[in-house]
Length: 155
Ligand code: HEC
Image 1 (cartoon, rainbow, N blue to C red):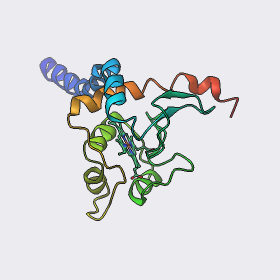
Image 2: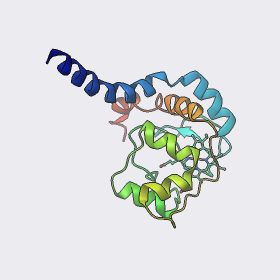
Image 3: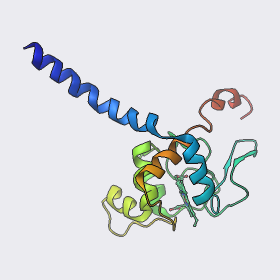
């Protein structure tokens, strides 16, 4: 009986621990390097006041500020494709899992997630390795979360 309880507890813990483990195992410093190499041609990270925190001045893709937990396709004034907006309207937010799937194959991930073979993404880029994607997510997660409260007033 005791053994069974331990096993059940371990199984319960394993789920969240695995998910968190990914977030924790993401190396933000390595992610920064990858971001500067792979993403800045199309993306910036800029706060609500317009201060560019990462990248240069690219506008091909949406601003990736405060991405963690953000609704898909929700940057105002950015002209997204229909599929990513559709998912956002269904309440989907950026988590590590969604991000890692998306950046490795934007259109493929949108098709699978929407269960629609005609879905399309406008992001014409793929991250080659899952580990790079995890690290980039860890890096992007450093923007916005802490500042969010302090900035709430200025909005
Ligand atoms: C060639 C240009 C290009 C490159 C390079 C690129 N992206 Fe994108 N990205 C886009 C475009 C365009 C979109 C909008 C997609 C849509 O509307 O379907 C986008 C959307 C996104 C989104 C969705 C954001 C939201 O507001 O929901 C994420 C996340 C993202 N890109 C991450 C990345 C990361 C990380 C990299 C680097 C590994 C990267 N992108 C490289 C063009 C690019």
